[in-house]
Image 1 (cartoon, rainbow, N blue to C red):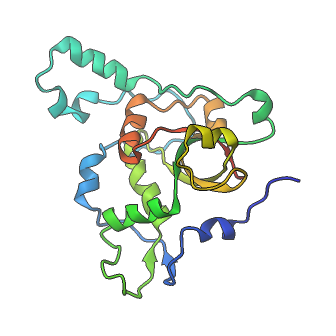
Image 2 (image 1 turned 45 degrees about the vertical axis):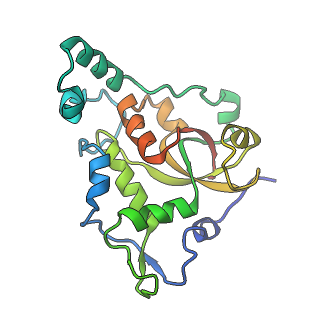
Image 3 (image 1 turned 30 degrees about the vertical axis):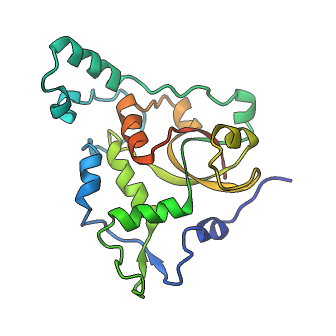
Length: 218
């Protein structure tokens, strides 16, 4: 029997509060998160063509301020290099299922992220106003780490035995669906997109874990 999950069941995990949720325009952003994420290009992309080289020196001015030129150039090369996405899902498996490369995240972590960084999140727990959508907010904020206008997306994935072995902190049992903050899909990979080391480095700092491949809920 094929694996099936409805959108309503999937989203229900995020909205345990009795107050309804709403999507908001994130005009006011907490300064703590702005300090943690580097600015990136806002150019929208349609296809994964040749990317502009990111200006690493302007992104890390304080870090490299007293470095010798040779060390700066080595750092630039490292930050601009494609992130190692191996092991890539096998062709046999990928013909049957879609795969995502990204970060496992729990509903409580998504909610806490908004509580900490979203200036529009109510401070009073008794506030009955509609809550901002925590999933939309974490997508929006983590996308600042991406270059060339690319976006991080919150998607669903199936928990496999190997996922639990690699990341024992996964709360969901094998065979259940979980949340993943997606950097790219296997389709993106086949089209030639490769996230740079500097992008994944910044996301790793925020997520406090590393990304891997997940079997997508489609």
